[in-house]
Length: 118
Length: 501
Image 1: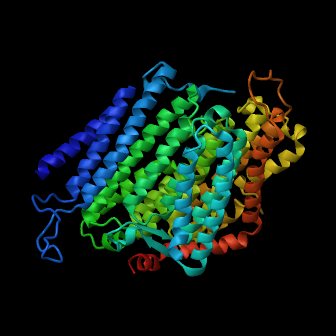
Image 2 (image 1 turned 90 degrees about the vertical axis):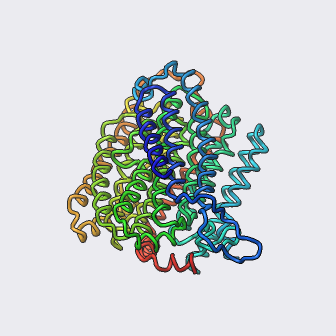
C-alpha cells in the first residue's frame, strides 16, 4: 500500500510540475491542482498508514491500549483540501477573467504590463 | 488577563472584517469603520507589546488543549513587535486607501478584504504551530489575490496571474515541508518541533525539509532566484495595495524563515551558508534591477528585493549582532517600504505618471511636500541619522566578525546602489524641469481632489515619516529592543519552556 501511495505521490508531483511549465492557463491550473493533491497524499502517507485501528477509546478504558491510526494527518488534509478548493475556484475564475480581458491564454504573451510606460 | 491580551488584536481584526462585510455597499460607513477600527487596533497591539515587554512570553492554548496537542498562540517580543508594526502600517494604509482608492474598487469590498489581510498577518505572527502558520498564510494569500485583482484592469490581470501562480506554488512547497517534518517527528507545535527535530536520526531528511521550507518562504519573501513575480506584479494594483504588500507580505516570509532557522533547524551550518550565498545574490540582483528600471513603483519593487538581502544576510550570520541588525532593519523596512509606495502613489496622483521620464519639477511646484517626501526616501538609503543607517552598523560588524567578507562587501555595495537609485529618483522626479504632458482625460489629479481626500492621502505619509524619524533619532531604544529580541531568538530555551510549561 505504501509503495503504491509513494509512487502515486511522485507521479502527481511530477505531472504537476510538468504542467505548470507549459504555457497554457488551463494546464497551469491543472498542474497546481495536481501538486496540491500530491501534497495531501504525502501528508497522508507520512502520517503512517495504520489499518482498521480507529483512535477511539473504549468506554471502560481511560487511554488507548493498542496502536492506533494517527488522526492528525487526516485533520490536516481536510483543512488543506478545503483551502485548496477555495484557491482553485478562485484560480479558475481568475484565469477565465484574465483570458477574457487579455484575449490570450499563452503565458508567454502576457508581458504588456512590463513594457507599459506612463 | 494575559490571554485576552494576545487574542485581542486577532479577534478584533476578525470582528472588524466581518462587520465591514455587512456594510458592503455603504462605502462611507466602511471608511469610518476601517479607520476607527485600525486606530483601535493599534491600541490593542500596543497593549500586547507592553504586556510582552513587561512579563515576557505570553501564550494561549486554543480551546484549552494542552500543548503540544492543541494549537497555541505565542507572543514573544519579536511577534508582539511585528503585530504592533502591522497595526501601525495597517492604520496608515487604511487612511491612505480612504483617500486614494477609486470608488469603483471600494464598492467591491476593498475594506473588508483589506482587514482580512491584516487578520492573516497578525495571525501568522502569533502562530505557534506550523500548520496553523500555513493556514494564516493561506488567509493572507487569498486576501491578497482579491486585493491585487480588484478593479480588473489589464495590467492587474497580468500581474495577478504571475502573483497567483508563484504564491500557490509556495503554499504547496510549504505543505510538503510540513508533511516531511510531521513524518519525521510527529509534531506540529513549533516548541515541540524544536526539541524533537534535534533527536531525529535521519539528518538528510531534516535537510530536505529545511530546504523545502526555505524555498516556500523564499518565494514569499522574494529572494534570488525566486523573486521574479514581485516586480511583475507589485506595480499593477492601486498604490494603497502595493503599499501594504510591500511593507508586510514579503516580511512575513522573512519572519517565518527567521522562526524556522532560529527555533527548529538550529545550528544547521550548511543552511547558513546557503542563506549567505542567497543573500548576496539577492542584494546584487535587486540593486541591478532597481538601477535598470524607469517606472517609479518598479524601482521601489526591486529595492524591496535588494533589501530582503540585508535581512537574509543578517539571518545567515546567526550571531547576536547579525540578528540584532536583522530585527532593526525589519522594523525600519516595514515602516519605510509602506511609506515609499504611498509616496509613489502620491506622486502618481500629482502628475498622473509613473515613469521617471514623465515626471519632474516636483521640488519647484511643491517645496514643502518635497521636504516631507525626502524623509522616507532618504531613510531608505540610510543617510545618518535617518533610520536605515543604524542597522547596517550591526550587520557590517556581524559580517566582519563571522568572516563573511564577500557578503559584507555586497551589503555595502547594495547601500551605495540604493543611494544611486534614490539620487536618480530625486534628480529626475524632483529637480528636473517638468515635461510638458497633456492632462489625462478622466484622471483625478491630486490638486483637483477635495480637501478631505488630500488630507487622507497626506496624513499617513506624515505619520509613517514621523515613525521613521523616531526610529532614526531614537535609535538607542530600537537597538535595545532589537538586542533583546536577538537574545530571545538565539536562545530558544525560554520560548520552549513558556509554550510547553
